[in-house]
Length: 95
Image (cartoon, rainbow, N blue to C red; front, side):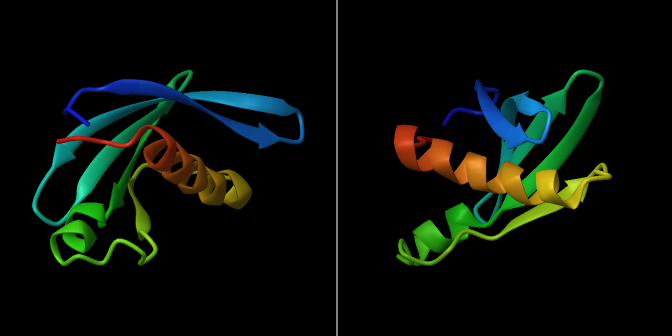
């Protein structure tokens, strides 16, 4: 996935679906950084997928961390990385 690539994910919540815009903002040899935006709030998640890929650990679970911003709802904070993983698995990413 090229830096700056934007895509949408949807997270189910009590009140319905929450649509979130996601943009890959940075990648290093160890981490990928994704900016997640909903209405007027932006947060950034980091994962270790490039590190796992470089070591050949394709079956190991990708570790996601919220590194910038905060979410009041723990459920949403756990669902966003799941949806990001689903998107990456389904559509793949190329640097």
